[in-house]
Amino acid sequence: QVQLVESGGGSVQFGESLRLSCVASGSVFSIYTMGWYRRAPGKQRELVARILSGSGGGTNYADSVKGRFTISRDNAKNTVYLQMNSLKPEDTGVYYCNAERTTGWGPQVYWGQGTQVIVSS
Image 1: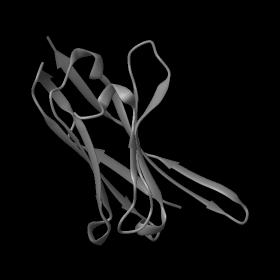
Image 2: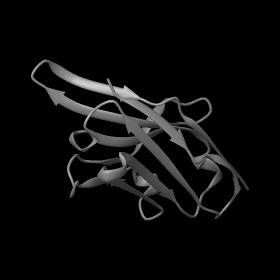
Image 3: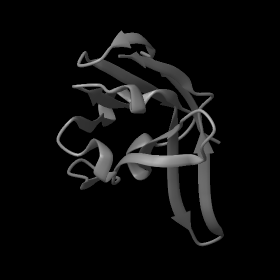
Image 4: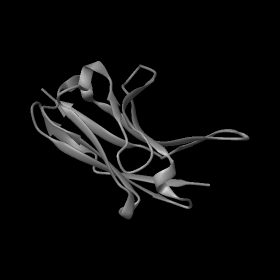
């Protein structure tokens, strides 16, 4: 089992920045691919950014956040971050931390409770 706790959400103005953090506990953090997803009001949850397991994990981003958001991880602190710059109202939503890995018994997927981000114009 992996427990994920997000923090760092809040209300900001257009163009401002926020950094989300997600602390993991309960397992070996470095073996999990970590991701940030968001659910905007009235929409389905979507992938925002993902960083692969290990110390030099590759990253990928949703087109809508490329160049503005940066995902990173600190395996020593069991933490994944999402630096969000130049925020827009369409970035508003609940942001969820995700941990995934594939085992011989199938995928393991864990979710945090989410942290709210509100961007005002």
